Image (cartoon, rainbow, N blue to C red; front, side, top):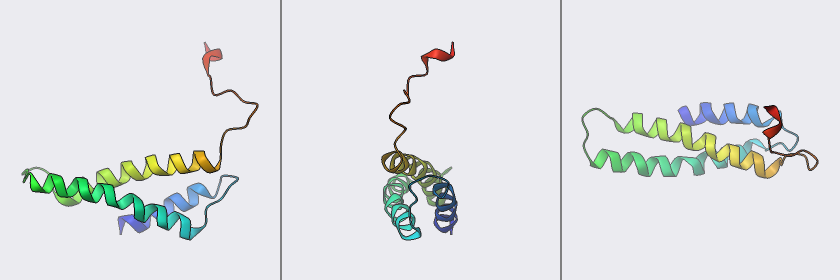
Length: 92
């Protein structure tokens, strides 16, 4: 259920960018983003720690990993404008 909710949230987030992703692409990225957290949660479950559950570890790592993955995909499909420098040294 959390995967569907986060897929919907990422779909609406991606809709504001110039290069939009389709629902199928967003859903596929979300499915691929579920596997590393699933492995991490399985490893933590194997340690049998009393204060963490499989669901907690999976949700936290999935949430973080999905945000990182979508930020990377959005930067690949929507690079910054060519004339703008990414160097912010002029603020101070």
